[in-house]
Amino acid sequence: MKKIGVIVKEISENRIKDKLKESDAFFIIKYSGLSSPDVTSLRQGLKGANASLFVAKNSVARRALKGSGLETLLPKVEGPSGFIFVKEEPVGASKVLYNFAKTHEKLILEGGILKDKVLESKDIEALAKLPSREVLLTKLVVCLNSPISGLAIVLSQTLKKFVYCLDQIKQKKTS
Image: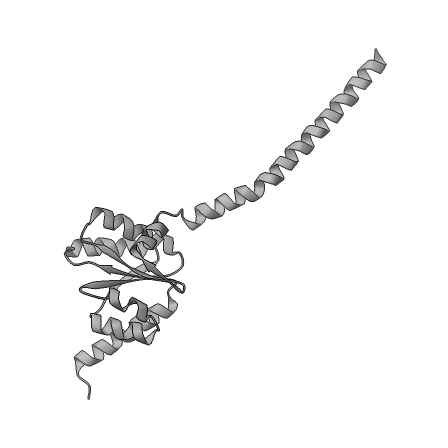
């Protein structure tokens, strides 16, 4: 029969592996020195961005990362580490982390994974400074709509000039 501690570690390791599989992005943070209300506030902010904070023992996290083929992140798992699992849009979660780190100096962005690319802390900051997906899609639609709108305006002006010309000819013939 296994000891309860071993069972808890196995459950945590499996949970990390499962979350890694279903996440679009994964970030590692250092949270040493943050108060419990600060961590709760961070969790709530991340929840609004479709992300979650998970804390596990480093030995468990290292085994899970090795088992998932993410050995490049092992050096970042030192000291009290938190693991952010992001579903869907990673920009929102990186904005929450970046803004929280600006107001709480004890939070350190270590790095992470976005799709198959390893991220450093500067990459997470760059990601946080990007506009949201909705803003980018809106800009794309405006760019795509612009030539069509310009063509419609040119064609309507040409039509107006033609009608004005016919009206002038009509006035000359009637006078």
